[in-house]
Amino acid sequence: MREGRLPGRLLRLGIAIVVLVRALGAGRVESTDRGARKPESARAGKRASAPVARARTGIAGLVSGVFLLAAGASLGGAYAAWGEDGTVDAAAVAESSSSADYTTTDATADTTTAATTEPAPIEDPVPETTTAEIPTASTPDETSEAGETNTTPPPADTSSGGSAPTETVPPPASAPGSPGPVLTSKHENRPPESSDGTYPTIWLLRALPDPTPPAKRLAPSFARELRQVAAAAGVKWWIVLAVVRARGGDGAVPAGSHTLERLANRLARLHADTHPGKAILRLSGHDRTFTDQVVALARYDRAVGLRALVRGLESAKPRLERKILRDERIDIYAGGRADIAAHRVNVRILVLIRYLRVTFRQVTVSSLFTGHRFFARPGVVSAHMSGLAVDIAGVAWTPISGHQAPNGLTEKAVKAILLFPAELQPQQVISLLGLGGPSFPLADHYDHIHIGY
Image (cartoon, rainbow, N blue to C red):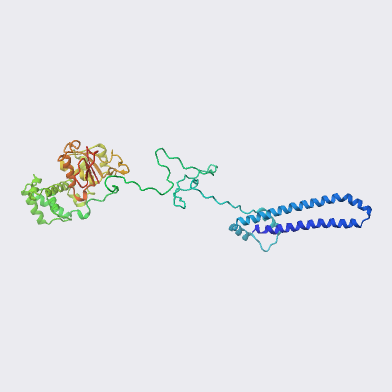
């Protein structure tokens, strides 16, 4: 280390000063002895030269004192530096070990190196930041030891030659009406988004699968046989299939060939082709619940078609879109027609529109995706934004507004929707009537029925 040679040099300098002072003192003593041996006449000349000698002695003492003070200050500074920084700079050690030549004793080169090389400055430790100070150089992901998130602004740009300010910078002012910056992670629990009921309602708007999975689709062979048997008996295939389903027939082959023939022939004798409701009511022994279920299933089968029941509803979506757009008895506003043409509407909504058209012979759609507000209520995105909701403003050429009395047209429409197959049951049916299940009333739905998935 270059710092290690400093005490040795100071020691040699001090010895040289002491030798010089002793030499000056010896010369003065010698001159005194020589003067003692001179005659009395020479003493007068000595007395004349005495002031000069005293002046020389004073100058020598002053020079030696200055050197001693400088040496003491340097030595004290060196020891103070060693006391403050007891660590050794690894880079300096590597440089010293790589450049030192232990076979050369060139004092001149050593002295030059020591004079031109200075030890690296010792940086003061960074003071700790109190809770009232906000550091100016931090990243948004930086966290303190206490786990609090640092939300201070980024450091100032110094690319133009300027330097960032050294004083603390206060946090940016918040916009009027907005909360201030969050400096801690300790906060109260978020309040529920809805005050209705015990628990809040959370809507997760995600892509839904095909409502008719392969296990619920008809086998192609059964579909062909169903069409042939119904045509031979003179009845519609969707009525025969609805009775089979209502009786519990499920799966790809819900009934055998013999059962299909017997059922189709009996429905033909009951004139199911011209009066399906009365025929099914007589077939069920006047069971009104069973009759309503069969009628709803028959209308659903007719709305989607036999090919969709075999291949799945998603495969039939383009055909359903064309049928809806071409049907003059389905009244849809211009933005809604554009939504259907752009494939923004889920197949469940398309099936529902077709089902209401078959049930009431006419349907009016007032809202799909275009034109509806983004949030259904503060913080909750509307299902319309995912094509999973529709507003029905009228059925059977009659508006919903003003016709929501009990046993009226709106109640019949809501009941028909609630008789949908289980895989197509909506999550919300909102009007001024509450009929149980997903049906509940809201005062602002006086002029339409909202159906949402």
